[in-house]
Image (cartoon, rainbow, N blue to C red; front, side):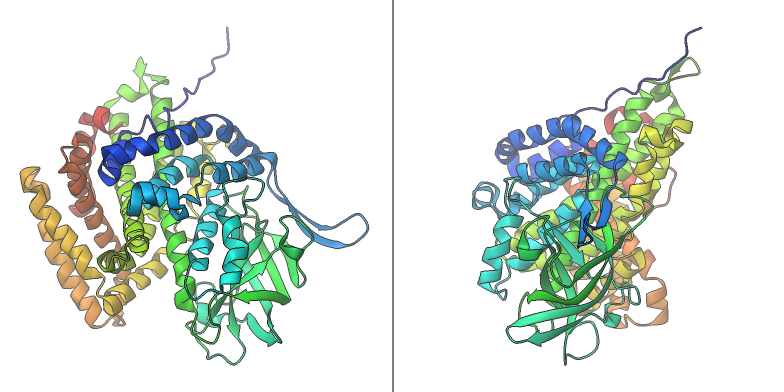
Length: 560
């Protein structure tokens, strides 16, 4: 008797097969703008479905290795990475995944919506990038920081063109060296010191979690000698990872790679503990002025990338689960035709769509801030950035657990590649701030910047908009707007009160869920059946706490 082998049908093309992505882009870019982006998105999708999927597998199978010494005993601290990792590096440059929002031609074509095109690229690229999406995020953040007017022009001219290069032979990425073992998210306890030595600044300290340790440069936080204690006086410095700034050469003086991290997931990504001993750092802005606000330019960008990675990973995991269900026979029929499994997949689809609109809206706001200096967008982004990051991170983990379960025992076997969906997802609620850290940041945005007002206004407006679509959704959003308005005012009045702080996570998630519902209604108002279905089910699931399984199963063909 022949041995049974269950084939895994390939998932649909990640661009052509993602209806919600395409209708979202129609609305964000206009039909003409979307048409102008189509070739770029189609090309990347073809790469993702072919060579980049293979490169991803290679990078996972051949994790990075730290070589401390050369054969003759010289300290080299070289991080060797796989051919697959290098292929991901080249593709990120070639497809302008970092560079696009900074290119004059792109801004001339799409204006503020250039960030929405970039978000679509990340949505396609990230899930099969072996988490090269992480150095992509930090390169984008470093580029935004270098674009600030208070950064020395010479520093900008030396490093920015390389971060934004679309030539794989010259393009570089950036690391981010901020976390220290004694402080973690408590940046006030950072002990890395920057001292003046003539015209140079020399940094000394230990950085505990340095992702993309093979990057040509890094942005590090340090406290200038004589600066006040606390986090606000920390200043960002640019450090070359290699001597002479060359990518992959000998280590820069004073930079020591102690070890690579043995992590739960993101195994292809080299993350290191790095020691600094009088390492030359170039200040990004005036180090005599409080610098944390400058560093937040970078952090906002990377938080948005984190949200994009979460939503993109959710969508790709769903694609694989759907493909498997349409090829797997159970109890005399296809698994996809089981009402119970249809309900599971469709509910996951609702969550993936909700995560996507949160990330997509954040990128759209960022584009309006960068192109046009829109103050309303800036005010809303101050709250939306932490909300999008924290909500999508948690959704990504719960969804990844379900995806593993969708494959049964095969989902628990490493060589299928399915378990890494869960391993890689777990970093998303942690990197760039845990859920609790982000919830407290959201509180500060509400109290200091009145950032809750534009978000509540959007939810209230969506309630009015929903009247012609679904009275139930309209009533749910109107109630959510009233509730959030009262709770956010209470939080703003005394953000340090024990009751407010204890409830910060719940309030942040509730606000994010209401915002996602509002965004889906805005999309549905353009006669988008998929968005309308997702809006109704999302509002019931996340704002009313209802079980949506029966309706989700009925709408599985629309949602999946």
